[in-house]
Image (tube, rainbow, N blue to C red; front, side, top):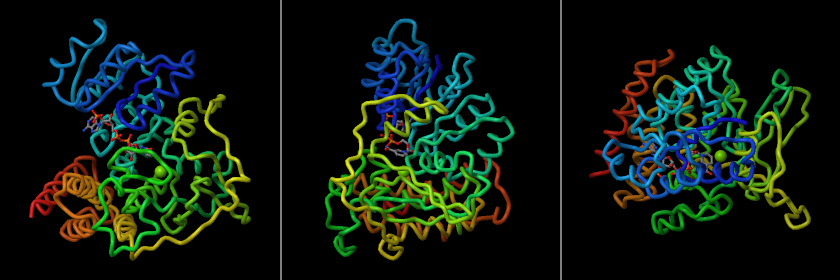
Length: 384
Ligand code: NDP
Ligand code: MG
């Protein structure tokens, strides 16, 4: 029986994780759950799974949720609340399904506490990948990726790491792949949010439309698998059947295939290194007929290029990229800026950023400070 905490249980990945756990309930005991503000759903989940502890986004919400929780469930809040969950002795495995940069400190804590990590959150790896991976190495903690591309690479590399020559990071191309860029600002937000292949939270759905998601994933792969940017090629694969590929030194290519359903990589991260049966649909190759591939269009999707530049600048630039993106996406979702402004604003913030850590590894405090600066800067630009 694995004792598990699901941080961000009310989101898209969180809900899929609880669905997987419900099907494998004899193998898992849920100790902790967390949400930011959706206390209605969190309390429903708590009554169903009877966790020992739940965390909410702020202290003010504790009063509101208290009466709706099982009497034995402890309530905590904020980043300290998340830290309280992951430091418990009765938690073996932590699923990081929180969106954005807020789970960086709890993630590092969980690694220091030698918990097994199932990681969906990509922003923390982008901002502080080298710190996270070196802590994981030092503490002999394995990070099992949930992001479908990284789960694919992880599985393809099993036992072959020393022969790796290149990674093909695939992406469906998002909802705007076949839309002329001059029409981007006339599209409704609903259209931008409706991904053709995956059902996800709002932030990552906008990131998929701008293709920033693929840019962040490139940086995520660089740190997770310790490979240079030059060895990662982004490949558009609209059918979303291949979830990524690795090429070995002798030219042999391994790919991981499956239907686009996040419950498959989530289940693998939970049961690793074992596998369990599930009810996910199977591929019918006769219906797919063809698998196609194209090069990404860096001009049409400038966020890809911004991510590449931030990645090679290193230091605090990837954190600034991430933070500016988070705020710009919020600005877009709140109707303050147009779709095409997202990449322009991120580029402006990156230009203004003084990457004093260039060439060196920043500390967590440097990263958090740079991210706070980038968020303030982006918010100010979005107001104008
Ligand atoms: P959602 O927006 O659907 O859910 C986010 C979850 O995190 C919710 O439970 C939310 O609580 C909680 N949360 C948000 N902000 C905070 C905060 N400041 N403090 C504490 N909790 C917070 O996101 P997704 O599930 O789509 O994505 C989660 C992460 O996984 C992201 O990093 C994303 O990039 C990554 N990912 C997602 C994929 C997907 O298919 N969705 C695929 C691959 C990676 P509340 O509900 O109360 O707001
Ligand atoms: Mg992905």
